[in-house]
Length: 307
Image (cartoon, rainbow, N blue to C red):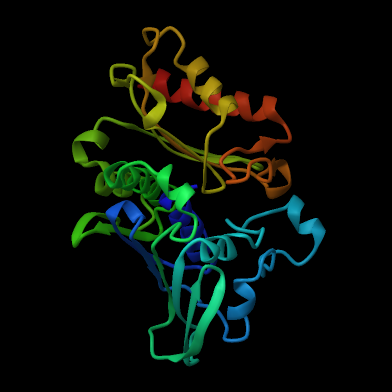
């Protein structure tokens, strides 16, 4: 759809490669250049051509795996889709092996050879939609597209506080998270200490569900839901069910059209959530919606009553 979609898919791949450090760099809102580097386990030499084949994936091995998904990507569509509409360069190296370089242009392999590079993967995406000018016309200004990337990477940095994210553009670093596992520390890096200092910590550990994050006291509100960042199994989502549960917990404490700040990561067993209902995996479906609704409502309400 836009540069931020490319960034999302490449971050998903880096996380699935068990990266503990991910650097995102872009120019002209990502239209001219997107570069993402990670220190994950890299791509094997023999797997590199297959990684750019449509529907080829190493993340599921049978149809049954679709009902218990724990990886961020699983359809095998991201890399071939990106390569078909851009100029893509890949530098990748697995531990204790020689690195590899591959270059794709408009979906066609132009070069593949051995290369010297550190363990992990660096992917450079240039001239997005260079071969589909009609799509390029629908992009917003570089500033607007850059804001979409900033918003997206911010969400991932909070969903994965144990991973150090660095976001930069034109040699300017927007933020760098410590990667120490603390949601609060990640939020301070992204939003600043003033934004975070008055938020209330929220935590729950149950047999099936776990939840962790921060919510604002009733006196701190926003005019829209943009500061409600929700994650299910570390996947950024938009969920009307979770929004409703939060609204119900705050009922009577806020004026109409006021929204609390919420940063919440909900962990659910893989078989109890379906992430395959939206092309970009932004929406999820729960097997037991009533149970999830009650849990979130009571968790937030309990935290507010203690405050």
